[in-house]
Amino acid sequence: MSNSLINIKINKNIEIFLNNNQLSNNILGCIPQDASSRRYYRLNNNLLLMESTAIENRNYEFIKVSKYLKNNGLSAPEIIKIDHKKGLYLIEDFGDLTFNKALKKGISEKLLYSNAIRCLSYIHKIKHSIDLPRYDQNYLLKEVNLFTEWYFKEINITLNDDSKKAWGESWIKIFKELKNNKLVLRDFHADNLFWLPTRANVKKIGIIDFQDALIGDEAYDISSLLEDVRRNVSKQTKEVVIQEFIKLNKIKNVNQFIKNYNILTAQRNAKIVGIFIRLARRDKKIKYLKFVNQAMKIFLTSARKGGLEEINNWIEMYIPKDKIYL
Image (cartoon, rainbow, N blue to C red):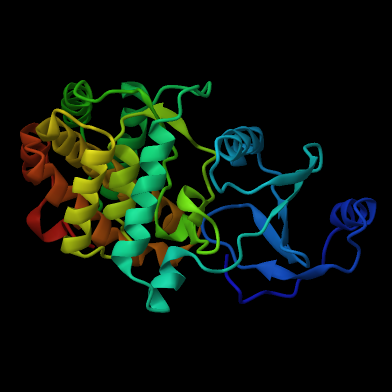
C-alpha cells in the first residue's frame, strides 16, 4: 500500500460504518489505487477500510481465501468487520513495505524472493483443500483470447475466423500438459507481497489481492512472481529461486515443470497484453500502455523457450514484424 495518501471526502455509508465501529475521525487518507475499482482508506491502529462495491471485485471470495490462508498460518489480512451490503470491510494493514519498496530500500532481492518461494511452497503443501473452481482449459483460453481481441484492434488488423480458430485450438493442445491440483493465487508478484521482517518463517510474507484464486498448476504463481512485467528479476535470482522451489516441492519431472512454467508465462503475458490495452483504450488508463511491449517480449520469449511451435508459427503468420511492438 502506498504511503502517499490522498485527502478525499468520505460518503455517508463510510461515515456510519466508522461510527458504528467507534472509528470516527480515524481516517488518515485514501491510498492511491492501481487497476482495481476497490478503494482503501488508511486508519489509525494498523487498520484499513476497504470500500469494494463492484460485483467483479469478488468480495466473498476475498474473505474466503483470506481466512483460509490465515487459518493455515500465513500472513493474509485479518478481516475484522464486514458489511457486505454496503461493500465495506475493516481489515488489517500490512503497512507500506511491498517487495518493490523493500528493494528500493536495499533489501536483498534473493532474500525477498527466497522467502516468497518458501511461502508459496508452504501453500502448496497445506493438507486440507479449499473449495474453488479449477483453472481449466476453458478458463485459460478465455484469458488468452484477450490478446487476439485487443492487441489486433490496437494494430488495426482484423483476424478472420480461421485464424481465431487456429489460435484457440493450438492453446487447447498446450493446456493439456498442465495439472490443476494446487491453490493458485494468480497475482503473486512484487506489488502484492509485503515484507514483514518481525514475523516468523512464512509469516514474513504479507499476501494480498487473491480474490481470483483458483485450483491450478503449481508453476503458475512462481511464473507470476519471477516473470513480472513491471520489474526485471535478475537471472541469478530466478535460477536460485526456481531450483529452491523444485527442491521444496519435491518435483520429480523437472523438464515438465519448466515446460509448464513457460506455457503459463506465455499464457499470462499474452493475457496481460490484452488486459493492459483494454485498460488504456476502454477504461482510459493510458499509463498501462507503457507495459505492453514488456509483456509482449515475455510472451514471445516464453513461447520460444517452451517450444510452443504452433503458437510461434501462428505469430509469424498473423503478426507483421514491424507491428509486434507498439
